[in-house]
Length: 543
Image (cartoon, rainbow, N blue to C red; front, top):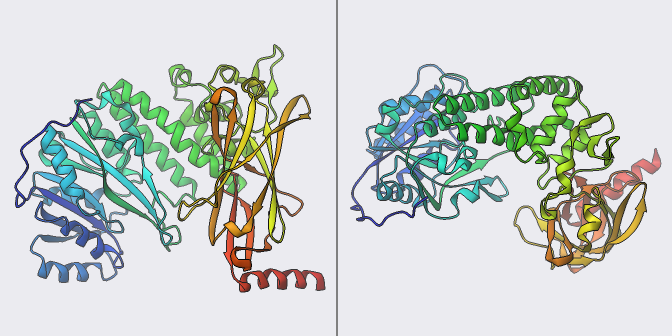
């Protein structure tokens, strides 16, 4: 890695970048995307808008915009491709600028994005420049930075193997490419309906060993519309075909890197599949029916059977590797709630904590081949600690009961001294007051142990929104572990309740378990929400 060298600034009127915008039946957003590209200024020579044979007003809107904007070229494909790769390839064939970027019709480029990437690319003489992508949840507006660790500072890599973590950023849209580099190496997207086409494209880019410049600037805003009528490919995971497509794209990416002699990057791609893809789908597996679960399990076992010993040897107790080894060890779906919690971020390994006959920690008594022995030496701040949480709401306050489980003696060895409790609003990131400290006290629980603690929750600190519970377990000698809490159900613990919030106003509170099993709250203020609960309870009494 090298610092970006100083360079002569480019003239402000030096147009060098073409932006390819693709869309299909997205009249509501496509012109906003195009305008965000044109607004980058004179650095953008052309915007090539490729319409994938839309049946709505997309083409007419683009044509009207092109009539007033000479930099905009509109290309309409005659037949819908069913994917994103073909229209992007069409744009690559039409672009004339020496550098090129990609933009989807429902996303935007933030101001200064193109200039930041072009400055980095030209200053470092790099074939590829990448920057920070932000996932913006709509309509709420919550933002999550994509692969933030990669884009924490300016950096230049002579070739991708210097930073294997690059394989984790499979997006093609937060990057600027030298056009002749893509053409010289024949780098294109898979044609037709090929979900996760950017996995393959990104692997082809890395396989060609480009010099890469990275910048910490925000260069792409990825809009996530979960309530849309037509979900994006990455969000539409209801059918097993989506998982098969994702595993196929991951397999091809691995083979592309391996075939190019990039063994370290290929190994990193397999590790990424375990740590990212496998965890996402394992976390959601319990939401599907039995038919899906069996199909998913069988397909995943077939995929993981291609892995060799070295794929499993590195960091063997990492959550993705443990999940993969359980899937390989069991012919049928099993332990789904436990796998779900292990797939959460941060990971939680729920009891029971079994031992083999010789005393070695293992996944379970009937899967002793899945050893957990490395947990005995793993640093305490990386352990998959499990904390159960029960929330018992009352009118003005609630009682939060927490239980920290022992993990093969490691918790007692580290000496838990405090459980720090914080509620954070998912939409705004604001905390509901300062952290609350609770002292964990040891209590016996079967053959292991549990540390218990209780804290009060004051509803007056909560506004409307979704609130996630965040915990920090503090140990002796300053060590600590950030964790989430496993939501304990039953006995009406997750039932909606009417409570008293800020300024004595009524609020509706509903504790619930997230997809990863963590405890969270939905808070809705107002008399209307509370009365809906009262009416519901009254109807139940009548019946």
